[in-house]
Length: 232
Image (cartoon, rainbow, N blue to C red):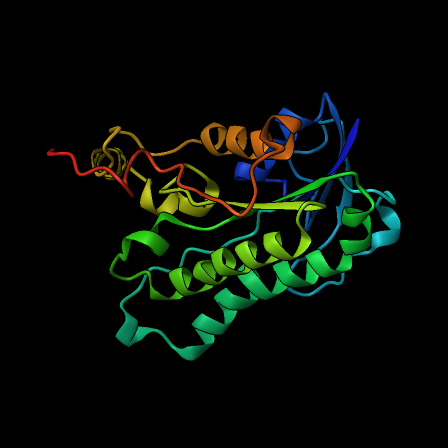
């Protein structure tokens, strides 16, 4: 069985991924709380990505897969954004992720071939108003992932999933009533917004041997938004 480390797994995509992985892998979830984990066959490691240093002594000596799930969605006009917002988004989305990867690099390189899965956003490719802060921090992830994949090939594979709007607690304010949900669905060529299952299934694929010849890629799991122009 493979050893998979999820940074964040109590909610949303991370929690759905933990459910998918638990039966065929040894899953370690490093998160602030163990909420929604009690009924899962996973090992919880208390960890706050923004403030803590990951205690690697609580992890196995070999890590075959790493998924960094924490993220933010700050959608506001650029003129009203303070520099602190950009710094906060970069800290959570990028710098904390870098710190985690560096801390478990010995365990990742100890695997025959490990896989890192990171998350971006469709807004990096599309260019959407009010997304300057989140697109900046997620864009950094895309560039970082390709460089890291090149540096550690073939030992470590690194790939990125770039979703569009997905029904998670983080997106509650954008899907808080039926009108918002319908408008969000209609914005996508496939006429629905994403589910945690959509994204978790892609992450699961990128963690296992079926994707062993894939690295340095950005996967747009976004209902066709980034590549299809469809008349509504």
